Image 1 (spheres, rainbow, N blue to C red):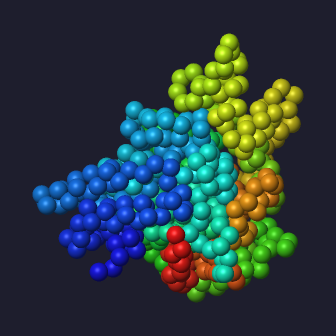
Image 2: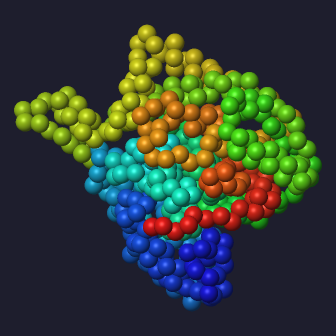
Image 3: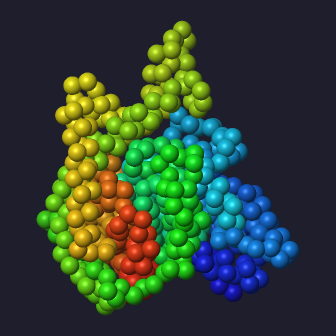
Length: 494
């Protein structure tokens, strides 16, 4: 029989429903894979094998009783450790939340449990989702399962959802939740050869998700195929009255609507994304993607997104500003870490707790955010950034008058080695150059594996769609997936 850990969401769901194998057998196989790989990859902060088995037993019992099964029945997943999980530690990969155990469940995770999924554990990430390499976690780096040929240097799995991407690529789970603020689903998906979609802002509830930048944060699925992403997104999405930014719209049947034909569709190629000195492998994969979508029946048109060059500086004003506000709640008073030196007053406790609990990247972004919001600089930085954000969104609106979806690279390079960019924040921030614009505009965007570069490392292609058109994004992604024929997986070294 096929190794159960090689199966994705659709195959597991269908196999459990057909009685080909039980949900418990699936959970046991993935629990064993997690236990074997965790010491080497550090993809999980907490493992929950009993929770995965309990959910599997409920699914098997429901099937035996002839009850209807949910969209994710029998599928054990990884949960990024930004999502509050009742009775299971939730830390955002930060010391300041070490030991915090919520008494409530995030809406997204509850939706997944209601659909029949089980939890293998809480996945590692960049601290408070701030990072592009998974090197800022207080619980240690996640190691990508991919390696360069004849090179044992550990590679970055991308960030911030690096634990999710590494676990899926290594076959420790068939799928996982991610969050995307400026590319944190798409960039790690590209680095590890998997698929991931950031839906339209508001599709998935933010209630119970530890906040980074509230006007940008959006949950989404990560899996090994476009179909699996469509299935999981259906289970995750939906209106939530507890989230004031939640879209009060019905959840489409994205899986049923999958269609790889691009006949009658126009695909926009943004001229501003052709950067000087672009990695030749990335440029070639982009050209391959254009040819594949043309082969699928699409008309290729050039579009302009003239304010693209301002997207990164705009993002790195708005996101830290919102982070400085959101992270003010971590003060050592109500929950999490408390550092109280002898004889300290309240302000001393605040300072000591935050100094001990926040990592360097989080402190850097809080300071940037506080600065741009301060008197005398608010109008010069934050107000101007919001104006540019509106212009970036307007660029997309104008571009979509000429096309249905936009095709671009996901990241400017393949995965880099851990430590290569950690001492250069600006070089690290440039990893988000292709992903940030869609986030600022709140648009759905997906990364699909496009092939391998000359070093044998995965590259991703990004499809950006109009607001609420996840179906169009998924369909274009499926057309790319079928033509790329990506079947590569990392050679097992762990």
